[in-house]
Length: 144
Picture 1 (cartoon, rainbow, N blue to C red):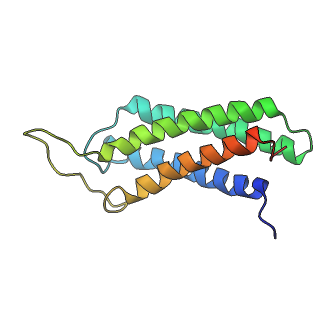
Picture 2 (picture 1 turned 180 degrees about the vertical axis):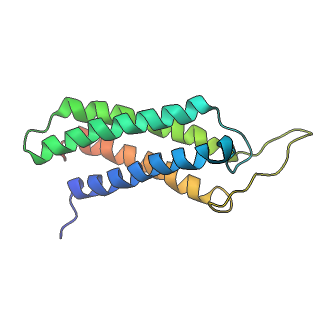
Picture 3 (picture 1 turned 135 degrees about the vertical axis):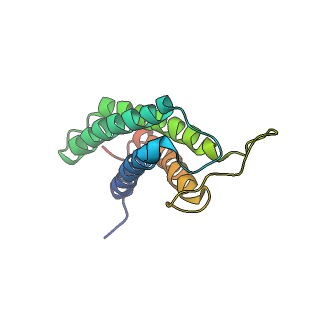
């Protein structure tokens, strides 16, 4: 089975959907207290979730039209715009691991999802890479 831009796109889209859902689940459990050094405002989490869902809907619609042979490019550009919005919110969520400074700062809070920022960094930097790849494929016409 050859590796094509469409297959790469589909795999990255599924992985990004998992990141959006798991981020929401992780940060809404335990009253919003998640691992990290800083607390994240609910508005950023809501932006991440809403942009992610809109990205999945519009981008998924674009990919469906590509399979149907009628690739609606405008839908792809709207989807990529939502992916970039999701990416920015995700990187702001990742910022909860930045070192806290000050006399009364404490070490990072822990949870049962893993130790340190590794999982969050992998997920949110992965969406950044995905957004770059989707944008490049779309602009270069590799998906329609």
